[in-house]
Image (cartoon, rainbow, N blue to C red; front, side):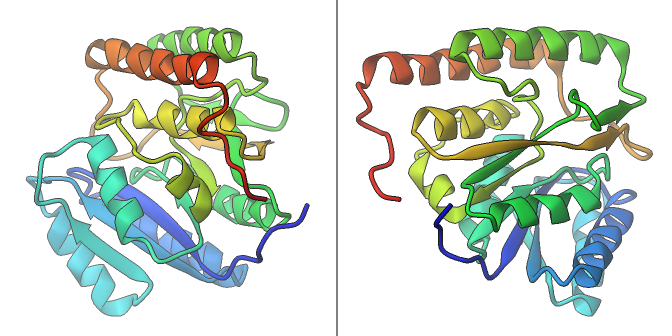
Length: 251
C-alpha cells in the first residue's frame, strides 16, 4: 500500500480532573514509545479541570519536552477537548487515547506500526480474538454491545467496537473528515464512521482495555444516547444521499 512515510506520532489525550491518573499514564506511554523508538509528542488537553490537573501537567512538562499541555479556555466537553488537541498537534499521525490509563500504551506502538504499512486508519477492538476488556461494568458492557451492533448493521461494516475512543489516524484523515460536529463523547463514532464513509483505508487490530484505577468515569450514558444516534444518522445520511461527493479523490 503506497502512502507517505510518517515522521511524528501525536497522542492526543483529553483530561478533566485526572490529577491522580495522568502521571502514570504519561510516564508509561512515554517510556514505551521511547523504548520502541517511536518519534512522538503527547498533547494533553486540560478540559476545565477543577483539581490540580494543570499543575501536574506543568510539572511533568518541565522534565519531559515531548509533553505538550494545552488548556481548553472555551466551552468544555470531551469532543471539544479532542478537537483542540487535533488543532494543536504537530504530527503526521495521531492516536486518541484516554487519560485514565485504561488504554494499553503497547497498543499505541502497534497502531504506529500498522499506520506505517500505508493504511489511513487503525481501529482497535476489545471484542475480537486476542483483544480483551478487564473489569468492564456490566451495564456499560451491555449497552456498548447493543450500540455497536446497531452501528454494524446500519453501516454494513465488520468493525465491532466503533464507540471506543482509542483509535489512530493519519493527519490527512482528520483533515478529510472536517468539519467535526461532535462536542462530547459522540466524537468517538463520528471520526471513524466519517473516515469509512469517505473512503479512507482502515484496519482493525485487537486491543486490551482495563477499568480506571483513579478518579471517576466522565461518560454519562443518559446524556449521550441521543447524541450518538444523531451522529450515526447524520453520517448514514451522508453515505446514502451525498453520492460520494465527500469521498477522498487522491491516493
